[in-house]
Image (cartoon, rainbow over all chains, first blue to last red):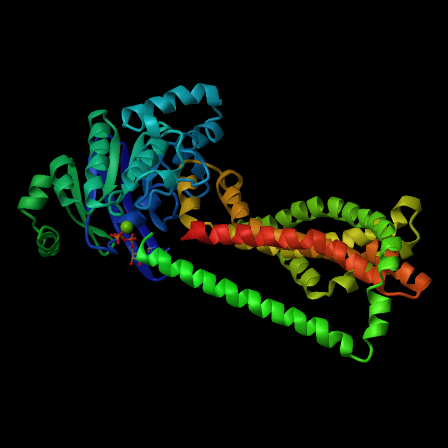
Length: 244
Length: 269
Ligand SMILES: Nc1ncnc2c1ncn2[C@@H]1O[C@H](COP(=O)(O)OP(=O)(O)OP(=O)(O)O)[C@@H](O)[C@H]1O
Ligand SMILES: [Mg+2]
């Protein structure tokens, strides 16, 4: 079976430093892949490359076997199929939560407000945000804002979701409500790539864990193998620090 | 009332008292000493002549309508042109390079020349080409000079507003599949414009005053009308009348702009 999302030798330079240095990765349908690793390892950059927010220098990125990294491809049509959620929520402050979520379906998919609103309201409902829909971002807690950001990405009905440390800016007691959303998505069969410092969550929920360092995947495998029997000394050192 | 509130009330009363006393003293000094200056009698007659003011004020107000009209058609044109220039300077793709150069040149030129010079050059220069009737109007070309100059300043303010929107907003909007144009229109500009409303208010106030520069090329607006009265009556009071009319408009407008600015500062925090 071909992977839903497949990275082949993805290479990305900032100046002279290779921030992604030949990354190979397969993400199958319905899989949750966690990227772990020390700060600066290239997790965010890799996710941004997959979403074509950064052009790559070498290698290819395949979505359903189609190369989406060829220069000159229409990035909008690709991004419409891949949702992304950021550490800092990045909700549009001048719109209500509902309008945040309806903007892209209206503009990109050309749907009318009447057509899209019930669908989007249903999403708000499903993630416990029904009574928050008509509020502006600054009236919401961090956890609520992040859940709205997830709903906003889901409203485009993406095939793959990318999450970049989406709980790192949250108060500890709000982390759980956002991670619960990920579990719900997993149970619905969403394909997801998650950069995270939440080792407990990666261990419990991931299908595959990749340890990134210096722009390379040093080690990958099922969470049990990575967390209990890490092979690389660097992985062992990182986990020793992270799990302390 | 808590001890702190009592203390603060005491402080407030004290500072009000000090302010009142010092104002009264200053007014008294003005009232007593200014009339003692040797030229006071003459100045009073030629600048603060009640009869002249009464006689000229209605006509001055009529002339001020001309100011308001020039202001009213220039301001929207400035907003639109300024926004277009800002967008041109902000265009990202390499194909837009000429547009960026044009935008930069435009702002450099029209911010670099004193307004009055631009008014002269365009206001005298273009009608000098001998264009037919409506196209040689100094009202038209004077307004064009104001529009070009102010659009350059307004464009820079819009541009700073666009820069003030965090780049993560752009990344988030792009990641949803929006095009660059949609990102600008739906996400960046609404925030950018809101961020610069107070600064643009100040530009409006400045424009309102600079409309008077058109008097140099012909239009009989309030400043020119006051000049006509000055020559006619050999008295400067019409100028004081004109100044009062301006102040009636600009002081509330300035206060309002300051209020908007202060509110924005509070919201930022
Ligand atoms: N726009 C950029 N220009 C230059 N260098 C960059 C840029 N973005 C990231 N980098 C560099 O690339 C490297 C990888 O950064 P990246 O943000 O991908 O790491 P990360 O694994 O996500 O780290 P963190 O856990 O702190 O989020 C870092 O050394 C960073 O300084
Ligand atoms: Mg990161």
